[in-house]
Amino acid sequence: MLPIVIVNPKSASGATREKWSGVAADLRAHFGPFRVAFTKKPGDGINLARRYAEAGTDLIIACGGDGTINEIANGILSAGSDTEMAVFPSGTGGDFRRTLGLPTNTRDIARALRIGRTRRIDVGKISYISNDGRPAERFFVNVSSFGLAASIIDRVKSHTALKWIPADNFRGRASFALSTLMEVIDLEPKKVLVSIDDESLRPISTVNFCIANARYFGGGMLIAPEAKLLDGKFDIVNIGDITTARVLLNSHTLYRGTHLNLDEVRSRTASKVTATPLNDNDLIRFEMDGELPGRLPAVFEIVPSALRIRCPDPLAV
Image (cartoon, rainbow, N blue to C red; front, side, top):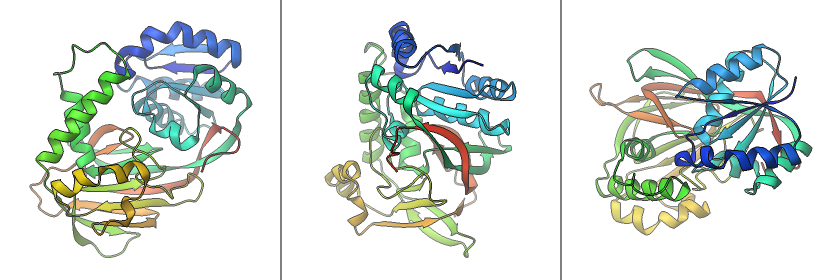
């Protein structure tokens, strides 16, 4: 079968839809022939990828942002298939693309997919409470976190003040920057109970607690500079009780990966994390690959070598 490209036309604030004809031409010229399917609503990527994987498709290419990549990975993994996945980034954040080391130019991406090497990477699995209050499970390929990042994403997704800006990556970046500033000004640490690798639960205070399979999140923040996709471990990064002023003064360190040197930051590797609110009445949502599927309590587990993915050679991590 020809490869299938699953496209989220709404990614990059709708810019993917507007630029698709040119992207498709470059992809055919520098990668080769393919089939295409378009998502229409959240969850379509999972269903389409599962269907094509179960039908025996050898390669599924996710064209969209980190949320689209997450859906395609979940569709393949839920099918129990050995279908290979590839990434054609066309979103606002591009965090997983950064970890893979993919280029940004359309033609270069297509060429990299054609000559890339297939690797088996780790994924994360989360058991949690969904937004409708039911137990649920989901995989992630990049980073999951709770605290400030989840609050920012929630605000971005509900924010309407920037709708007048033309649909492109600038709107997404501007909305993210504005939402970040608004959340930081009203900063309040979360109180949670955390167990790492089945150790005893212990209370912590966190501004943002990250379970990282890959290196970047939040549109280019190097949150876990030592994370590797092939090591069978998460990199855990906890930004503890830190003031608004300290966050603003040290925000540049998140993009350089030097925040690990701050007194309020702790990091380690682990293969399992359990997190629950310290107070039963607290609603603490988490994000995964930039999406907001549910809330704590949750269990985060590494699944080594679970997903075949086409990568630049050599793989960046």
